Amino acid sequence: MKTTGRFQGYNTAKLQKDLIAGLIVGIVAIPLGMAFAIASGVRPENGIYTVIIAGILISLLGGSKYQIGGPTGAFVPILFGIVMQFGFENLLIAGFMAGILLVIMGLLKLGNLMKFIPKPVIIGFTAGIAVIIFSGQIANFFGLKNVERHQEFILNMREIVMRFNTISLSSLIVAITCLVVLLVTPKVLPKVPPPLLGLLISTVVGVLFFKGEIATIGSAYGDIPNKLPSFQFPELTMDKIVLLFPSAVVIALLGGIESLLSAVVADNLKGDGSKHHGNKELIGQGVANMAAPLFGGIAATGAIARTATNIRSGAVSPVSGIVHGVVVLIVLLALAPYASNIPLASMAPILMVVAWNMSERKEFAHVVKTKTADSAILLVTFLLTVFADLTIAVGAGLLLAFVLFIRKMSASLHIKKVVPSAISTKLKHDHAESPISMCKVEGALFFGATDVLEETVLNAYHKKTKIVILDMENVTYLDTSGEATLSTLMSRIEKQGGRIYLAGLQEQPRELLHRTGFVDRLEKHGVFQQAEDAIHAAEALLWSTTVKDKKGKTILSTT
Image (cartoon, rainbow, N blue to C red):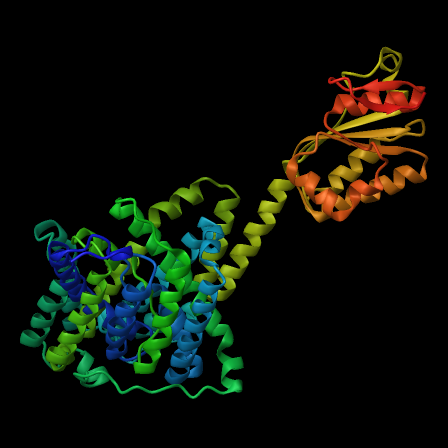
């Protein structure tokens, strides 16, 4: 059996590898799906539904061979905020709308634009999300009672401090048991999924020694139904669309970023030369996020940790991702009633470890130690993610990165007055009074640097100047603001009886000046291949001579 595309060369041996990888990832996804759902303020089964529906569709329709999709930690603060503000039903509508936006982004071929988001912004909001997830599980880890959850980080920390006297020794023992298993399992049993083993052992400890003493999924949420919910299309109204559109945009952007980052990680981990298709990945993510809410699922994206597990388990195609969703479905149908015995204290360390692993602490420390503009961008994004919200954080981080980039690029433009090496001897003796002024321009001439050009050229212009030559051989980029400044300079110089010559234009600046009509406004011979040609032409104009270039072609004749 052989096929083409992502399944090219597929055979029975590869199917066996995908079945094993899918089984392992499916087992890993079960506790994570429930944990992320609970942390997001919804019922645990909503996470399971997401793993099944979104997980299968992302693997089936996405642009990565190895991507595993489902609920992730990155969405926790976003989804929790939406639930707190608008309720669960509106959360499903926001997720559905986000799916539509992701499909549109894919169709508009915006998959490659995600790579232009600065790394400090990504590290900043990822670390901030990790802090929110970790701190959000402190209450369950210690078994604190009557803790009210808030959207604001400070209020949540205050709540924990105020309720810390209600600590439950039973919950703490269960949580520590799970944490120890999570930390020891990779060293002792590297092939066994730590979250699953930690959940099983700590649950057994809770049931045997502390039954009725600690909060469980059953006591907090009731029994988990052993079936998928019925199909239900959301009630979309214009009022709801307007109300939830900002939330949908945030979900779509975060989902797009996370899924493409995960796909890149998958490409690098597999190392078989295969590359994901960014636009197709966005479309697949979009369809999955449109479908999941129709069955009670929450927002989903590419899960980096589960994708890595999938690859390390020997996956060779998207079949493993499909199998992982089917495995979770089978477990839901067969074992759902037993999940009610899982202590909330067992879920807490699983999420805490996830938060620790996603925090990018080494990258965070490395960027901060550089004490550069990137450090400021990272810290601003991080602090606003924790103390404000992700939307403000990412917006502020991008704005700061943009401003600092413009400032840096502006500083890279160098303009200086020079003595033309090819100028005739009759002008060299008194260049300060020369009727020919020449400036050498180097770098990108764009809106952030036009003032430097204008100031330098006008300072080089004096009452005896007749011709200003701009040597632009090293100008790599020119935008319309730069062109407008050149136009202003030309007008001012012409009003004073002078002329402006351009020399050495590269392809991009030359094409732009032609499109804007600037070249047509210059004298017939106002643009030259080299600065030397412009100098000779200027002398010809001033002293009525005939000037030829190196090939013997007449450049200018005034005799």
